Image (cartoon, rainbow, N blue to C red; front, side, top):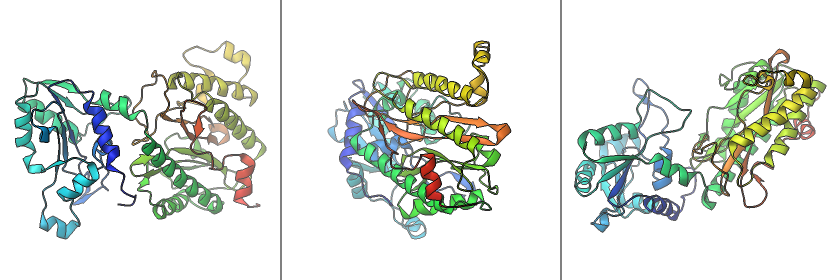
Length: 431
């Protein structure tokens, strides 16, 4: 494990909060992530399912958690199942989690082997009336591949068709959207690592380098600073690639006079950071590039003030789009008169800014959180205005992670360079 062990008090409290939301005679069932096939006999690197980690801290597959707070048997109010020890697997793959280790990490007292799961569930279902099952309900996500929780839900519903089945996702979303002090510290650590990687590439980037070489510098810094890796596929986009919103090929040569757009973030203890920066490949912005850059930076600073209790991400988006629209007029992309005459369902700014500017960050880079939900202290949300002018090969996005508090918003990425002059000075190159 790369990160120091998190106190199991954190996971205990998370389970207590969720258990407090379950009606009497209801239980909730959760599955760990499964190893995902890569090719041949290989798997992708394992990453725990976020809700399962939030509730247990366990970093292993073939594990299950059952919460049944009104269970008549006290020792079965919460049960964690882990993979039974297999000496052959341990010989080939390494250490396997013991029951004592699982209890120490999670704080769960009743630990059973995974091959006992069906029998214990059958016993619990005899007295339970309803079952909360957990599916990925992120509104913009869809996949035809069934994950471990979907497979488990289908199995339980088929085996117990007369029970009532309810959704665990809304309950967990309500809990995860407000970050505890423990979570905020972990996100701050992820942000710090991200900042160190950005400072490293400022010293590395120059014409003739390739995007994948720049990514390698980021990967190296992440590794030596104990990050698990990237929180999402990194975007290292030079020249015209900077105008491709989700460009992840990262294979083009960097040319003098072009911009280089970064969108990457370290994952630390399974918690994400999400940062965007844009720099000149040769270390010096052109006048036009700097005008566009400063326009986005002005909006970023003004929009950050919107991250206060009672506002919503939907309103932040709409207000920030209007700010960028005004900057686009000043940049000569269209006129104020043209805006007055534009089609209301196809505003002119959308040609140059076609994405939202605010989403929640936590165990997932796009963490649960409804866009109409009023902001509350403890939420961590991105602020990421941008401008994309394809005909000029100008793509600029600037993004920070913002903590909502009872007072002013807190920029968790405040130490990371962002001022145009500061970036040019740090690059220290003359071409």
